[in-house]
Structure formats: C-alpha cells, structure tokens
Length: 223
Image 1: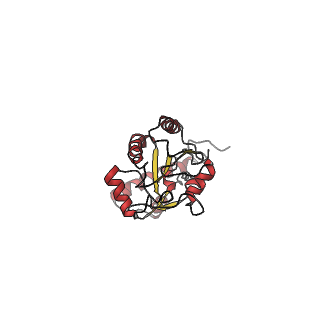
Image 2: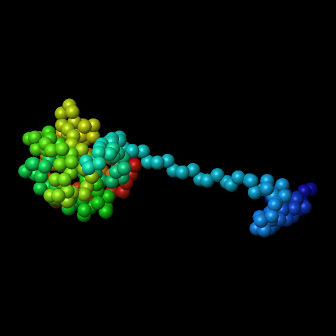
Image 3: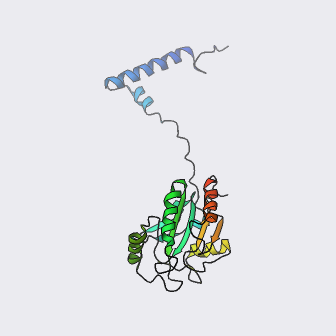
C-alpha cells in the first residue's frame, strides 16, 4: 500500500528533492550565478492566468452618438456620460430666454458633483436667434455667462433635419422642442426621457426635484 505524505501524491524522496531544488534555485538566482538547466526550466514555468477582466458596460443606444465640440470642433462621444443624469438643452444667443444660461450654469455647478451633466446644442431653428458662427457662440457663452458645461456645434433640433439625438429624444418623450431652451432629462440608464418646456426655468422647483430624485437613484446598466 502506498504511503501517504504531506505532499499530495508525491513520494517522500521526490518531495525532498523538490524542496532542495527550490532552495537551490533561490540561492543561485540570489547570488547571480548561472543556474543549472533544471533551475532555468523551473523559472520558466508560466504564472497562473489572471482573472478575466469584467466586460465594459455597453453604451445605451440613446447616447451612442458623436458630435463636434463647440470650441475645438473635435468629435465627442456621448457614451462618456453613461451612468450620469443628462440634461439636453437647445440654446440660442439672441432669445428672450437666453438668460437661462446663467441658471443652467448654476445648476450644473451645484449638481455636477452628484452626477448631473448638462449639454447644450445651439440651434437657429427658432426665430433665427442663433445666427453666429460656432466661434462667436462659444465666446458669447463664455464672456456673458461663464458657461462651463459641455457645448456642441450649432445643429438642427426639429423637423426632418433634426440631429439623431434630438430625433430620439422627441420620439421617446413624445415632445419635440417648441422653442429655444427646451429641456430633456435622461436618467442614469440612458433610457427614460422626460421633456420640460422652454418656460420651465432650470431653477424651477419641479425640475430641480426631479433631477435630485434621479440623482439619488443607483446606476443600473440596461434598466
């Protein structure tokens, strides 16, 4: 009958030999000597494979769009905002509601640490009130209202030429923008969309309460 040992399935003499070889390998490596062939072979044994890396969270279809940034013109993917509460606003520089920029910026500064992102899309769709170049729009926003939230190049937000994001926002909420500074709010999952008319200011308690409710919700990908 085979004798049991402390090394599972290894006979006594062989177990001692392995231990001696292990000590010998450590000694020759530490001393910087040329190790024997068996030592080199032992050192070449591959390490155990690392645990698989978790798959990246997929981008919600509603955010799977890229638009040129207002100042640089570089493409920016909205996928970077997944897991955030997103407010999408079509803006204009010569509108009676343009002072809402100030309220938007204040709201952004207050709630961004909790996960709110406001994105602005200048548009000339209503009353020809955004006729300037992208550079002029950027300067206007910075100089007059200190806008720091993300802004994109001028675009169409209604009708057949509406950009694909706005087409989806209108479809999911059941309401297209009726004027400048219409607001859409998208939950952390990137699925649920709510619409708030131009006349509802960014600091309106109804809108702020809803933002705070959504910010308090945990991020559930695919929910």
